[in-house]
Structure formats: structure tokens, C-alpha cells
Length: 393
Ligand code: PLP
Image 1 (tube, helix red, strand yellow):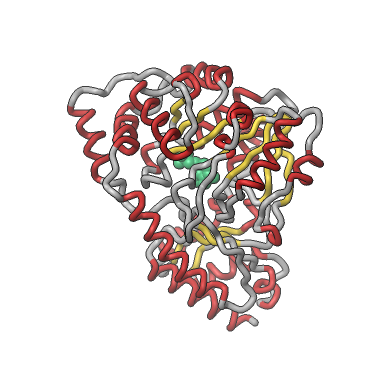
Image 2 (spheres, rainbow, N blue to C red):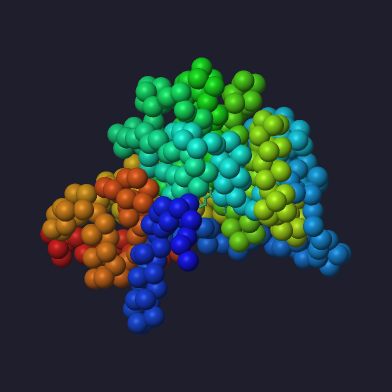
């Protein structure tokens, strides 16, 4: 059977090959440390689990409205009011099966063939693929390491054509952990307003910010920017709910309506009981979101210092998320490899440490390490990386 062009041009996930190899080595009995995880290593807080179980016991096991339960939309509206002081109405919100699905539905709703979406590099791996799946064209602008991997208004302006439809802003960022300041956001926002470009603001790491950093949403900066922006967010990272698959989009009524129509013919609705759990997540608080944030912050301090002390690795200090994105080209070269991908493969073969090569994020000189795993495991992995570099140099 000949498959559709749509799927044959999809790039397989960059984490896949290395994860498969790590798994094979583990099955052979090797002690492999994987630092590829994209999810918090904590269990979902108990009050959320209890709320979901209670909803099932009470018979809430049926279809819900496509765009999400009205009570959940209210809870999301409350979250935006409290955290960002933005006022949304229910018709400006759609709840989806994860933030990833919210993004997918958004691109399907706004892109025609050849429409361009500006994506800063390094990017989260699914953005370009989702744009392509909607027949759109990803246009990359380089977030330079010297500028903490952030793009400037000049770069954005230079990339705009008459086909540009949207610009993706991901702060805090996966994979770099960088965050845009309010001033930087205002500058980028002005360019988008001038050219009438939709801002897709992926704020999924909003709650995971460190050392006093404050998350700002570009949509909170003015009424015009609110109307020009679709916020994407969810509970996967904030409440350690990756498997529950609840995310949402907030913004322009017409776009949200189109997304809701699309969702009604694809998923029908996000899982009912996950929605009930999320209502609890947003309307109650047992302190666990902040406890998890503090645990990540503590790990970041310890592992960052250990990482930058390793010869040949340099790293922009992240302000948020749970990744480190060091530049490893010097280490790779010193070890005799002419690219970081090969160095990552050799590191897994010889020291049994699995990192994610930066090439999949559009940054081939870097590697991504997740610290969403135990401190002991990360520290042992860094000890092995240092040993590997010393041995090979
Ligand atoms: N956006 C970014 C930047 C992410 O890193 C992720 C998950 O890794 C998502 C969106 C998707 O999150 P969800 O689990 O809600 O689909």
C-alpha cells in the first residue's frame, strides 16, 4: 500500500533512535542512564487523582462538549485571570487532548498550502512537523547561543513574507530553558501586529521557572497583543499529568470556533475524567506544583555547576523548563568526532549515557539533557560524560 505524501515526509522523532538504542542496551543487561525524558518524574498529585476517580464513580463517563466541559473552561479562565490577569470568555477557550493536540488543531485551522510559520531555532521537534502536516511551510530563524538562543525583532522582520501566517514563541523554551523578557516580547509583538501575524505562544513550561524568573505571557502585554495571540498551555508539565492528555488554546473567537469544529470530527472531546481531574488541578492547591518546581530548581543548581566544569562543554544557564542544552562541539572535536551526533552515539555505546542530539531541535552543535530524573542518576551520568571526554581527548 502506498502511503500518503503527508506521512512519508514526516521526520521521525530525534529522540526515537537513541531511545531505541538505549532500550536495546538495557535489555542486554547494561546499566544505561537515560537523560532524554520530556516529562516530570513525579506522580500526579493525589487530590487530582481523587477528583478523577470520584467523577468516574459518580458516572461521569460519557461524551462531553467537544471544546471541553464548561466547568473546566471556567477553571482555565480563572487560571488566566489569576496568573496573567487576562480576561477570556468561554468562547475564547478550547480544551484539547494535550497541548500538542491543541497546536495540531490550530495549524490545521489556520494554514493553507504554502502558508509560512516562522519558527525560532532551537525548536521543539513537533512544531515543523505539525506545520508541514497542515501543508504549511516552516521558516526558521536562528536563536543565537550568544543571545541565550533568543531571536530578535530584526530577525523576525527579515523573515516575514506575504505568505507569513504565524510566529511561534515558546517561553520558557524546550530545549533551551531560555525565557524572553517583557521588553523582548513587546518588540516581537510590535512586528507581529504591524504585519498582522498570529503569535502562537506555547507556555507549557510556565510554572517551571527558577531563580526568581517571572513568566510573562505576550498576551498580557496589551489588548491588541491578546487578540493577536493564541496561547497554548496545559497541565502536563505543571501538574505532572503528561499521560492525562489535557491541554488548551486561548484566543480569537473565530479561530477557537474553527478548532472546536475540527476537534468535533476528530477526537470528539478530551477524555472526560482527565477533564474532571484538571478542574481539581486548577481550582485546588495542595502545594505540590510549587514543591515540584523547587525540586527541579535544586537539581538545576547542582547539575549545572557539575556540567559546566566538564572540559569542552559550555552551557547557557536555563531560566525555566527542565532541560540543559550544552554546546558539545568542542568536546566532540576533542574526542575525535567531527559532529555531535556521532559523539552522542559513541557516548551511549561506551559509557551507557543516552542524551538527545541537538540536530533534531535545529541546533546540531548542542545536546539536550533532561533533569527530570533523580539527582543521583544525573550526577552519575555527568561523571561518565567527563570520564568519556578525558579518555578520548
Ligand atoms: N510544547 C512543548 C514545548 C513541549 O515540550 C511539549 C511536550 O513535550 C508540548 C508542547 C506538549 O505537551 P502535552 O503533553 O500537553 O501535549
